[in-house]
Image 1 (cartoon, rainbow, N blue to C red):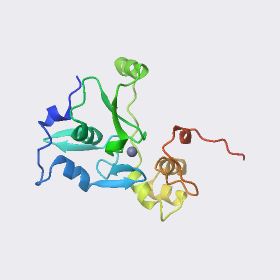
Image 2: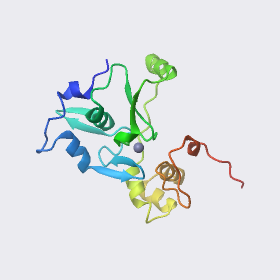
Image 3: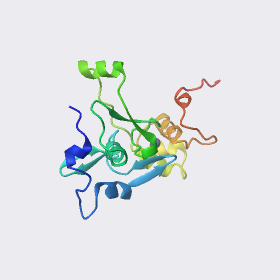
Image 4: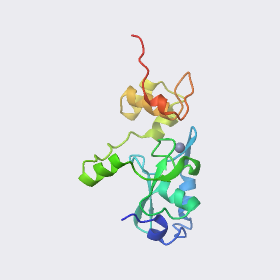
Length: 173
Ligand SMILES: [Zn+2]
């Protein structure tokens, strides 16, 4: 069931407009904080690259390019919890938790809702306020705030890749 990228495309040598898959990924790279994101498939949680007519997850392509084919049953996971990231150092192979396996097996796993254009939000972050960004991108200020926080761009204080940042501190009103 698990098919490795290497097997799917018969190695990483399929060129498009003279470029190898890894070169195409590098050209569309957007460095966001510590992460390497991409301007490809902005509405996908896991950005993809089309290779020989097949849509392949970019983080998997990069992982396998660096580490060789993914072992049976393993998934490419993110240390940084940023699904749009494909920085090799942020990727590792692991199994989904039992719970996740169960969810998948029972078909209860919901597809993640399409994301806001994170790349656009981050590009605007240095120029506009969160409220202004929200208006331009067409989402809530809360969403903008979450994206900036996740990317370590939160105004005023830098955040690290820390699970603790996910838990909102209760602020006095
Ligand atoms: Zn990352």
